[in-house]
Length: 224
Length: 224
Image 1 (spheres, rainbow over the protein chains, first blue to last red):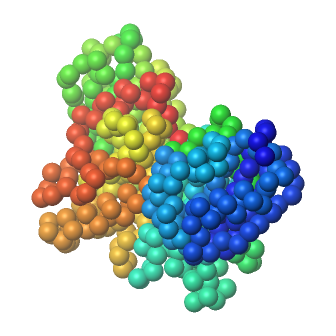
Image 2 (image 1 turned 90 degrees about the horizontal axis):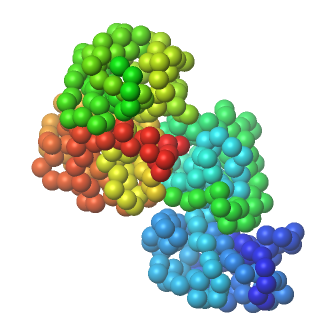
Image 3 (image 1 turned 180 degrees about the vertical axis):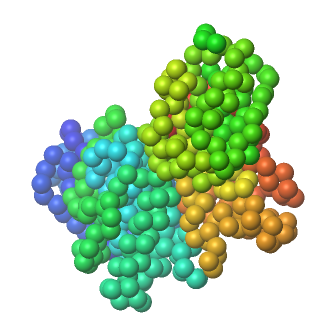
């Protein structure tokens, strides 16, 4: 249904989550390694035929540059690069990296590093309402392991909670220093497993993804 | 001498280099591990008594946040953190990280990663005229070595030119991916040793530091 308002779509590896920027209700539909952009658009549009919206924000896993996916998202199907989301939704679309969307929703001043501790390691920097997408997950960390290999889900399973938590504290401190950030917001489903929060960090909230999806249309926010 | 114009000061570990934004002449004076900010200001002001300027840009090695050094620069003396440069120069001062200054001077559109291959590894990202200082030099790279240990001067001496060049190519590709950059500009004295430039990269020029020191006063440029 056309009409005023923003539809926010958070595309994850397991679920696609939906919320209208002006409503409270959330809806979701299955995602997965076979999900094509066509199937996503059909599933989303079918699920919200009773919602009025004139714009869409898409939070996508993977590297985004200039509003376009740079390569196919690792945990989804194919056809995402070059897909015309505006035509498919018949509305203006803001496509952003999912960590960027959550980072913008979590921002409350200063220079903030967002890190998402989930299956992988999402990351983004926000300062003065300017967001910088980061793909630091695959940088080397220890021996043959990347940051994501250690603080992502695989690292948690391999090392156990105690050693994983130690790695998280170390990685957060290193990335905060590397990005010269004032503080760190920790999102993602595994943040709640931490017994102690790293220095200069606070937990994020899942609702911040939807908040970010709405804020991104505000003039003060920019994504580099 | 007061009057219109920008004095650009590039503070390195060995030399302090000076240029007026509107002139061609360069001057320099010795720097070193004992250099205090007082001594720097006296040396600089003495050297340019015949130049008219009403603003000063200081490019400093080390982490800068909100126009202030976060900690003492590694290769200089002490007293830099909290020093009142505006009072000492009796003029408005823009204090920026030296890699940021060179990055801004090298920028010509898109999303650019600047890497300075010198004693250490300076780094900054520029996109849409917004500069992001990066302190990625000390992130881990291989075994017990950081990026800087391998592609900085110590790495060059330890590994020899051939293996060093291989490391440079690998590190440039990794950091370009991590910062989602379109292209890389390679500054620093050791870039000229490369037999082949890494993919998506071009060499910078030393004059870009001075160019950046002037540009930073233009309204379109911001440092996060």
